[in-house]
Image (cartoon, rainbow, N blue to C red; front, side, top):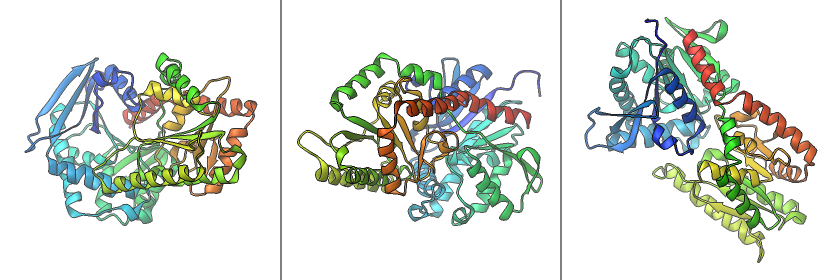
Length: 461
């Protein structure tokens, strides 16, 4: 290696362009990676989101804000099989314990492997000697293996942003063994929580015969990988600032006026079956039934922007939520009160910060979630003198860090209903105490801490 600082090559399914990020609505992951790319130099590579009749491997290289991005177009068949198929009909439901929604098709797996090979071949000329290569998420698990086959000897890291499934569930995936073995072509593999790491270690030791060493080193044959826990955070300082912006203040005041003295309960989730939205609506209905004295004094705002609309299971969840919210409103609404406001659109981050700040309670109750950054954003947006209360699923990765939240089992309508009532009646002193403990963690283990933790491990390996 030369004496220069290692450049960083980031590879993910999609790329956040610095130009789009300059609008202030970028996610925490994009903020951290773009900052690292500015500091180290390098490039962010991924799919453009566009299709082309025949794959050429032509790279669209852009430079903006001190960051280089490189994107490639895929064929429609690639998108159907790799993205809509294997990634989102096979791996996503399986890794979220929804084997009932998982579809196994040879064409899906073939397309997934083909696109990973195409990514590897296309990005290979962009990787220089000594560069650190950081691959992200379930779309690109075999990419490290494909890069090694092309002679890439650089340090390769992989981070999984979703849960790792229990062994008994993972074994239902055809070709599960070669998929997992491909992770041993990386030098470092990262997970959000100890639970996800333990599930990975259980599989590789029981099914593959891997051996555990010191400092997280796992050895399989001649290959060793370091497996670490590195929970992702948010840009806490930026989000706290966003909550005090004019856009946030306007959104806060708008919510306050529309509430007409009622307490708001908020949920913000991408429209996905893993988020437990039908169960959440049912829990809220249970709360209304058990606390008739609070009917008319609260309302629930559920923001659920649609996603992956070409996948049939997402169409089904939207139809179900339309029906459930309509039934609850029909049963409980009065001439001047609607218990659920259900909105199928997204909002800019500054507006969301203001909405969070106006909410007395946040319901973050996924059935299974790798991390869930909404929980952290809600805490960061709160008024220090009068903070709201976070109700958080024990099955969200964030629960391992945010222990001062009201932790609940999202499958239990009674438990979530009780937590809503407790949150609404919680004295200010207890709300402040819990909020301070949550904010301390969110500030300390922010997205830059996460980035530095992972890259530090990769540089040391």
